[in-house]
Image (cartoon, rainbow, N blue to C red):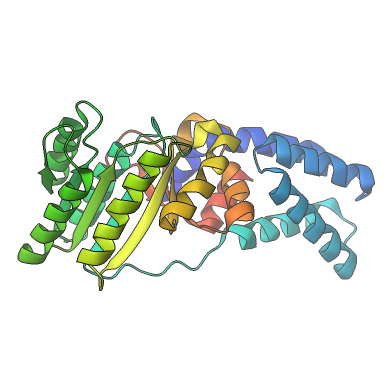
Length: 297
């Protein structure tokens, strides 16, 4: 299956949800107040969020007026353009050495995208070390070891209950001695309202900054697409703690709530960098704004 086919299949449920609603709204009607009200409701009910929906509607109204558009089909194409511009971020290419820290709440599934990222970098010819800094959850290290073996990556792990920051320190020390290209840091899932756990995450981030001051460092939050608007709420606290650079949205293939990408963009202006669209090792796809909008509309 090609990349484009994967993204379309992964977003099939989202397209079925949003596409049907928009088809009915844009079907042979005037661009009047009722049209805009129904369109805004359709976007909100498709997990775009209130802020994103309002922004999109206001921009659509403004451009429809200025361009003197009266045909619904032309307004639909304009809507696609507006949506595209709202999620089309310029993301810097990776440079090496690269350190990626993965954070998120309990149960979002950080281990799987870490394994898939390791596989992706190995396919690019890069050496990869995984820091198993989730020392809290039973069997977390074992799960990562399986993924590391599948991807052909090294793994640095300590015993259960040990200091996560010490694992990160050892992994980065290993990186420097071996000149490894990529270090992927797994962290324990943590509720965003647990202050002690967030302080622990800050400590891990400080260790990474101190030990690798000249590296390309990215802090990613992993979000579960099936939770819809609840995923949006998780971003703010994590961003305050460690300055989130990007979002990995998992389980996109299992939900009709892919519109949450728009909500995240409107609220926090943080780019989605990868979409998880399946269980296979190649099913973590770089986010492409145009392909995303085309796939859901």
